[in-house]
Length: 314
Image (cartoon, rainbow, N blue to C red):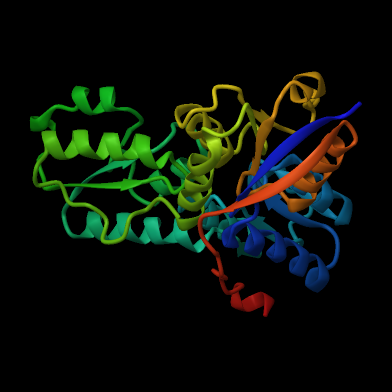
């Protein structure tokens, strides 16, 4: 006999406007220029999306040197790229389309403006994440100091900054962890300049708030997303901090722990900003084969953000 199971479904979940735009840029480029088009780095951090675009004719490379046919266009991923990348493309005579999320571009412009106005800059983010590499690469080497934790703030030497100080952040961080780091920065540097509008994006914030509002009701909570997806990994951390210790990332080669789910009364499901809704529905279908499921959607915000496509694709 199947057990009864309540499924709390987070809303908003899944694709954000920046991800939708980036995927649309690849699809439109394939329609306009034909196959293949090259994409530098995974267009968004989701294996399922990348595999789907490969089937349509996208070729993924990590660096421009890997592009065999220089007559084909290359697309830069949603995470943004250092300034050196489009410069390199121009030197190599490559035509390119920039799919950087507009909210990441906002942080890029912010950093350039601060630098121009004579500020030393601290970036709160995760080392080696493509977005962080892209943001730091907007300015000369050494112009941006990366910090990841409150411990990093403690290690900052006040006299090492000769100019006024400002901070910027990666767009996909944990809202609460970042607030702690910002508080530590403000305590140490009371005059630090903050962004006019916070850098963590609306989609990251909404998805974390949805998880916070349901985690304590759940015996288990599943986040659908890839292991290299920063915002998906943060959702698992947020779920654990908000009262559901059995929270886990469900990625493409992960088996669903059906036996454990059968022991639960309530579970939660959400998905990272680069995970398609199809994966959520597949997960629910799999659970329904084993349990009598009732679904309650937990809605914390309505999203209606859209971003324009680059003019060359309109």
